[in-house]
Image 1: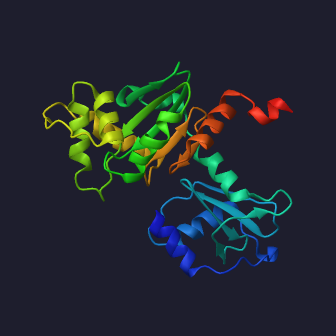
Image 2: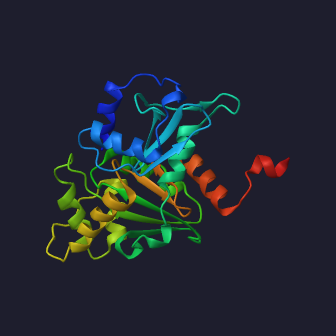
Image 3: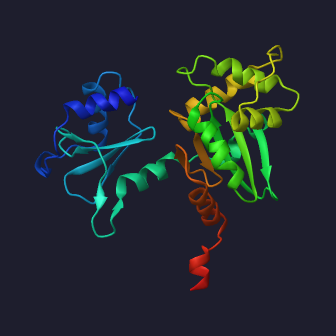
Length: 251
């Protein structure tokens, strides 16, 4: 999908706001599928606040097309009054999933404090950023349960076997934490049933749309691609649970 969107970007021009030849939403969808090789489905086409511009949603990606269907535009659409990225806000909205439907029994569970707050993380055991996340962020999260889904990426040749070693260990949580935080050698056994790891990969690919690790999911269903510093993630967790920031409370 990423290659498709990059291909569109290369061939795209700036939007021409010409509403005289405005096409219907269905026609825009049909034409885009015909014009872009490999693009088989358009999830949504929505009008924007800008005359002559439609928002196009493909999975978790958003781009824009002129209402006559002749031009496409990629990048962040910014509201200059609020200084907020409209594209980023909409991406977060369309990317949300139902947290309650994640198979948490297939995750490695870690509990900090009372564990009352919850996040899920799709992680690769050989990903350096995932290890950084475990070392620098997870240990600093307060009162949270972290559900880590093992999601080996093809770019790491040993990630699949390392995931299997963690899964087959006697204490998955302890083995996972020791490997990610201290590089403690993994046990060699991979003889257990690892079919659940295949289920995780399918969910990560088809439902969450993971295209890099770590991928964090808040209990609200908001997806955060990449690593956040502990302070920012704790603030996100406070926001989700309705806790006011200390500065705001003081005011």
